[in-house]
Each structure stands twice: as C-alpha cells, then as structure tokens.
Length: 88
Image 1 (tube, rainbow, N blue to C red):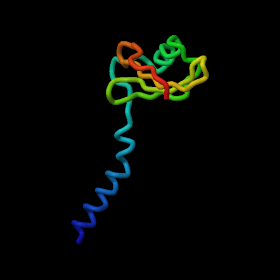
Image 2 (image 1 turned 90 degrees about the horizontal axis):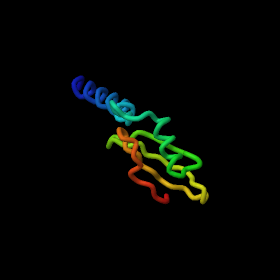
Image 3 (image 1 turned 180 degrees about the horizontal axis):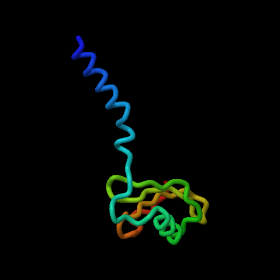
C-alpha cells in the first residue's frame, strides 16, 4: 500500500512539473529574439504578435504585414534566414 501511494505521489509530481521542463528555449548559437524580430520586420512585417523558440531550431511567430492580413513566419535560429512566410 505504501509503495503504491509513493509511486502515485511521485507520478503526480512528475506530471505537475512536466510543462515547465518541456518549454522550448533558444539553443546555443541562436540569434537573439530581438534579431529574429528585426529579420521578420525586414521581410515586410509591420507588427509582430507572437514569437517563440521552437524545439526544431526555429523562431516561429505571427504578425501583420502592410496588407493588414495575419501571416506566420519561421526563422532559422542560427542563420536568421526566413524559411517560411505564409498567410495564417
């Protein structure tokens, strides 16, 4: 009974902390978030709504261009090249 209770408590604790452990962070050698925003703006974005590090090596975000439509973009974390730019 005690072993089962202990296992249940440990499993609950592991699940409770999992979202924090799995958060995506920029990798070593990545361009800064400010530089990624600068790259997006130089690609035609007038507003950036969201930008975050993706665990696949990209900065991913959403923003608006001069046509007032919302677009999604993906920027390579190390080179800073815009790899995807499409309507949302």
